[in-house]
Image (cartoon, rainbow, N blue to C red; front, top):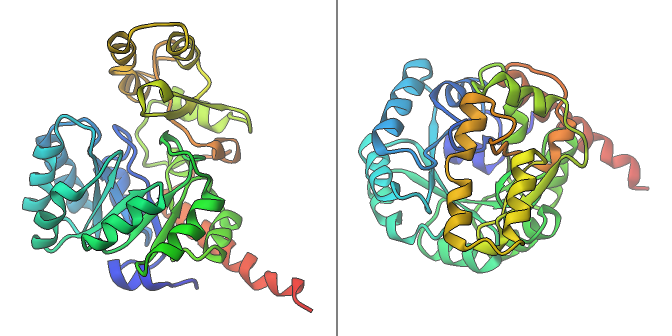
Length: 314
């Protein structure tokens, strides 16, 4: 069985993190992943602090194993959520879409392991100096907010830039991807899109079917003009937004166009107006299965790939 430094650090059986997907990664999904031996993560997104507190309570009612919370630093509720997770003393906080410097000391003082998502060597060095416990190097293949570098080139550079354990994210959905991440120097993997197919994932059935029927060219990136690029499925909304983005729409109107679109997809399955976040691996996700089975299947697949790699050495 594959075990790494990240397993000992967090207290998990498998070196697998579930991505913090806004309005998707709730307490139920997080608990299912944690019970399966990985680290389940509740996504705060733009939700208020009390929503996050409720989801933490739900997760803790379903599992005794470690859980995490992802704090989206661009959220208007970030200050409130940061305080809630400190009060609740969750096991791990992951951060995304920004610089976590403002909150690091508060979380560390609460005994929380802080694992920021990084998309560059510069941010890696910064959070290392600030006392992060590990980092998640997330390539642009991922769904949601994305950076410029791909996982293949980002992970080894991040590994070279820090002595902290590195979790690879972006473009990983099976044992082959996980094995590749380990070969690049990662100590674990984070998957988001793969867990959209979990039985415990409560997204609207329309959303889940779009993921299960996706192909290799199913995603696109919008939002670059505003400085916050996002990868999602190619839907009427995504195409409309792309046209508006490069058609001269003022920034404030463009910002308003995207407000609430993710929730329309997650809760209502609105195929016309919803933003269906997904990574490039959506075309590799073809069936619904329990979260615990996903964790185990990916790790067992990685083990087989790594054991078989010796055939290339003569």
